Image (cartoon, rainbow, N blue to C red; front, side, top):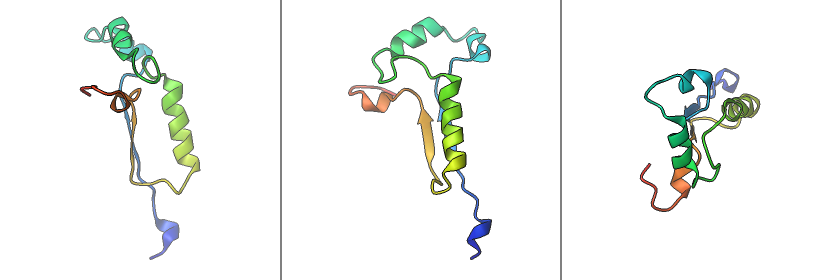
Length: 83
């Protein structure tokens, strides 16, 4: 196999991201969403810069492939979380 032709494939799966578009959606109450995220490790919702930082990291690190990256504040780290 010619490894120079191998393509890295990763998936970024963001949860809430604070953007003007998502803030304009009537079904999302950002204050309530942020309050429910307060116990999470990041203490709120993700910012666009968080997603961009991961994209940049993945583009520069060719050793990472076949992984799903959740950008969701870390609910799986909090005991008793239902997410």
